[in-house]
Image (cartoon, rainbow, N blue to C red; front, side, top):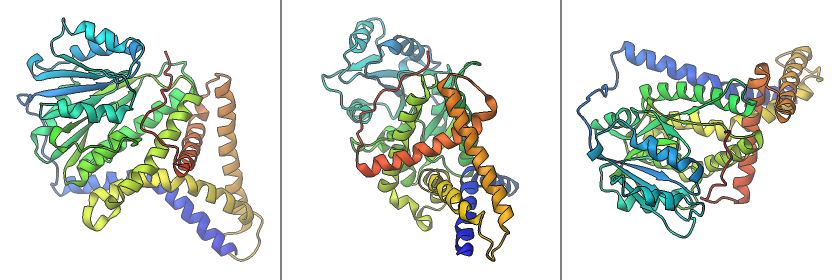
Length: 403
């Protein structure tokens, strides 16, 4: 009995540590080995490569952001004749479409696709693609601001015909007095950016951030209208065709964090549900014998984070309880497991305190890690339950952002 519990306990710990720490260390080591062997990908630094590109902005009821987005898009450093702007305002009722239509006389590069029905972001993208005549298309969200060099820094990678998509960086604009939801989200994306840099150097990024990513127009395939993670599915399907997906940190989209932890929880649960949906639709990528490095990265960086680590945390805690009180023969004595159980109780206790303080808008940096780590994994479990219930729709429930 005790031996079986110990196996579950330590296997769970190994899988969690591998998912959140071990994979990063392993990829870092593999990249170092490749460089020592003289193996690297060709640099993308030709400043003369400036092909035509279309910037697509799905924008449902984004009147509060759309004026800023329009001016930000027009200020991007890219030859005017080579950049087209397409806003897809499907079913907007707050004046977003009317505002953009009024700007078209001043900005001939701007096009607007309206409509009377809200169908969701992915359907907006599906509707936009037949209108695209440029070889490259960039998708970006209406509530984000791009850095001036974003287009140039993304597009330069496509000179390599083996590159099928390029993912920009998502940056969270967190004020010093921001709530833990925003601060935790910012820390998470900094770590994600570090891993994506390593993924690119090894082979390919596994998934793009929908706030800013680009694809070759002819590689975009029609995506199911109930798809929750369009950016992830689109980029992984392109990678599955043998193309690399590059991460470009010098092309970034800046957005504010979620308004509250309740808003962030809604977003995280939906993303997790989309992750399980994507795993079901991308099962072929689990075949490491066919897809090699891509499968290794996909399983380690994404599939395990959604489908393995959160449930292992539950197993670790539940297995630790009897191990702390069983004196039967095993690998370690009960007092060791009592210490480990105490450490878990303290960790999750700190997370609960962090949650209570967050609800009172009190910010304690020391609690960021246990709080956001626990929160993120709890949302993954809730996302799985939502996925199993089948309550999925391609239409996102808009999440409030901090002002």
